[in-house]
Image (cartoon, rainbow, N blue to C red; front, side, top):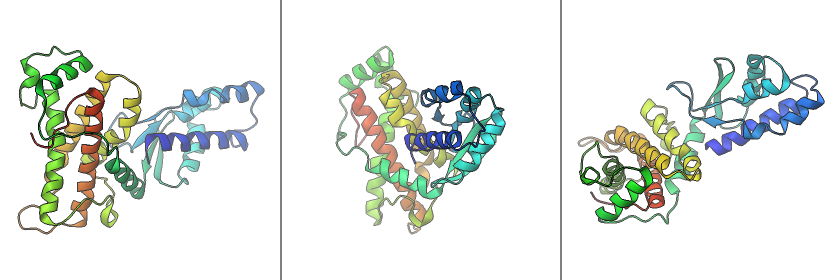
Length: 276
């Protein structure tokens, strides 16, 4: 379930709650104000880890329109959202925010969709350093100096390109071991903290890319790269161990991260290397 899909579910729930009388009788002014809610209701990553996969201000916005207490509105929406397909849990937080945890199957569906991704995003055996530095600097406002040519973790351009190359290396390593990616293999739920954080960053990619802000996109690719490098050590089985369903599932997540990185780098006019 992507943020866009969840956003549609939240808006549908808000409209139904308002339309079927769950919020009491609404004044003509409140009903008119409901038309402007979609632009003000947001769905995004929670500000703190461990608070679900997504958070929304829907109850706060609806409370402002109806004049009802925000936490009361949040409880009404919580109960209804929790019954929606693909949602595992909904909790009310603070003054009336809703923290939403999606079901494991919905996470696997998202991983599979992201892994398939944009098959047209180009990858390359070698980088084009001069062009890459020039285009990255133009996107981020950095000086195109020697620092962007250095192969070290503190260089954001290198980090993103290296993470993409690692995703391709993991796929090659898995093929050598006789297995491939399989989103949600064996019911794998991607609920380990680092995996959930990476998946959340991947889910945000299309929204951020659509903003048309190259600098923000570059920073987001850095977040994705950090997330991938944080899990890559657990993707392939260690030593002589045989690959398990968890390895196939994690490989699909790594593939999804690589696909997103390739797409983002392509948007910035930067090489997505197969080897680095």
